[in-house]
Structures are given as C-alpha cells and as structure tokens.
Image (tube, rainbow, N blue to C red; front, side, top):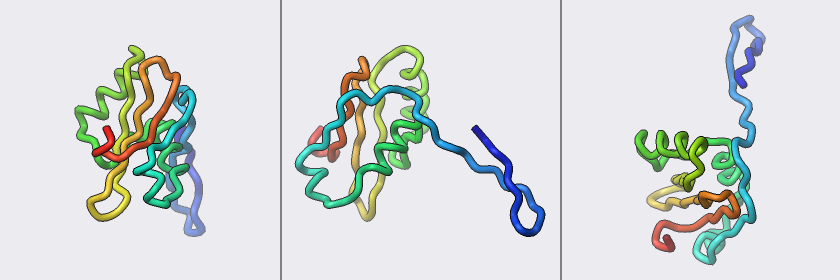
Length: 105
C-alpha cells in the first residue's frame, strides 16, 4: 500500500507499508546465524513482506513472486555487512521458515 504524506515544505512523498504476504510456519535459525549475534527480526519481517533482499538477482526475485502463486519454496538473501550474507527460506508448504548462512545450506 502506497500512502502519500506531506513534508513541512508541502512536497508529497510516498512510502510503502510492508504487510505480510504469506505464512511463515514455524521459524528456525541455525547455530551459525545465531552466532552472528544480530537481531534477525527485521530480516524476517522483510522476507515475510516480500522484500527478497539485496543478495538476489532479478530472476530469483521473479521466481519468488511466481512462488507466491504456485506454492513453491521462497528464498531471500540479505547482506548484513562486509561479505556476510544470510538466507531465509520458507518451505513450499509454508510449514517452516529457516534463517541460515549460505555455507549451512
């Protein structure tokens, strides 16, 4: 949902409210990703709302959009600093979502 708002100078800006697009099921995090010591909630929220991250190509993001309709697996990839990335995968049946490091895939 895009909503227009006015700034103090009268200019209109649009922003996007992120709403969940699919069920997450049970949520898991692997030992490797937990060892990073970061708050995973914002990444999980982005995934849940269809923001597939900055680590996927346009083709993979399009595949996720198709998956929302045909019920296949969803994958997000987020860069969290330096060369560190995390994956978030929701299973095809939406029974579970796992947050993991690429090397744990």
